[in-house]
Image (cartoon, rainbow, N blue to C red; front, side):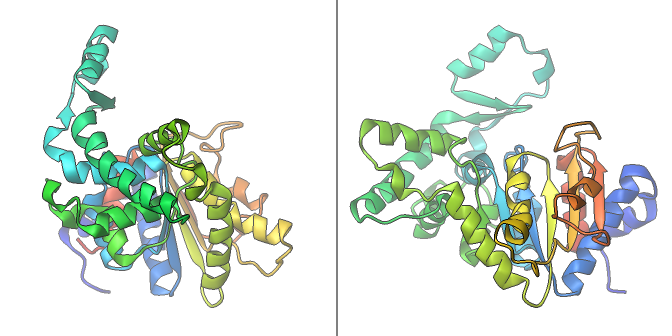
Length: 325
């Protein structure tokens, strides 16, 4: 057995039951997937970038322990915002006690609250806006079309943001992904600050909407990627939170199998969901993994894990295990 670090050994020794045991089981199952030559998709929902998941996810990307990411538009941009405006973030530990008037005061200060953390609008959103607009405008003038994450990669790799870096760039998962040209799928990108800003430019006539490739194009690209990458091995599915970041990409398998009638399409080879949505009727995020068998997403013998807990606690621990920390 290879050497494990102190965090990993602590998990093995003390996380023996209930959600704690499920955490270790899921981590060991993830590790087994990688050791067997399978690839892994990670899906990011919620505000994991604002929760600074890059501190462990960036290293996962560097060590080739994640091969594709599906994330919300918010997670795509918020990692970069943290990279360039970290010192201006404000933590509000007593956020549960805020009155509506105090919330309005935060708005007036340009502080957009995500639970206990406020993102500074001027330093974060506006600092990126001029640079991303220049890249969008260049594509518009040249009649070029790209995916949302490709525009972000171009901005990061151009070096224009380097003077603003306020954290160690090694803990920016987006920067690491850009360097690796890691495949990313961003369903519903329009539901993000940058998506809203892009729409505003289109309404003003400064940009044409069609320079931004669509969700349908993401799905067709993902279908081709899935076919190509399951020729010899499987692909696992590690879902952080619920919502569209996970719902969108997991459907590529039944689409290939049922709609394109590619009946030899393999199911996802591993499935884990980390969510505080408890098991419930009619809730996709609260559905147990077995329900996905009936939809043609996973199979009877697919390793299946569900951890009902806070992803901001669970995910860094699982990544620490996989990184032998």
